[in-house]
Image (cartoon, helix red, strand yellow):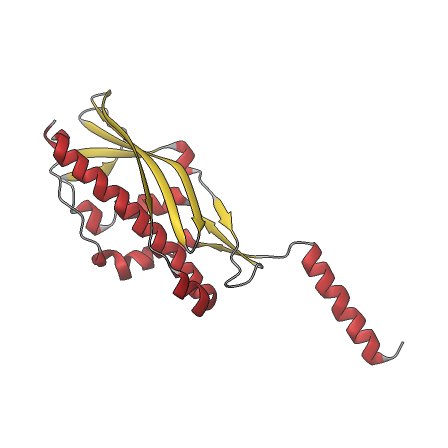
Length: 198
């Protein structure tokens, strides 16, 4: 076997090993969400509520880990969405905090407690699809319980045109948009049902 054939053989073996061992590049997108919020948080204006409450993110949501691949940037890339981390950072952002009288993380032993529990999350068709159950308890008694479903805007342009950076930004942007839609519906329901005064 001459040197040229040996190189071709070696490269072929390396490619086969890479394909069969599942080599992948992981992208946990939540770690870059703070920067995303700094850049895009001011784009969102939520309705206002006078409600003062503590909030809790359910265990299922805290431990959520959704992984997907996209042909737009190559199947070697694995996009990891830890929804609980993204939701917590969203709730603590300036634009969400300014929409409430007060909303701080806690267990709600006195007064209102807002519980967020993710029911489903999926990224497909270039966008995020989200379902979140939100409960409001007042001194331990449930006074509100509703599941909200939403979808973020399509991010096909970013996903096809800007490589892994564009894909990360597309995932974060559509996920944030889906959360914003849920929060907007929730605040409108609070105001309609006058729960903010309880």
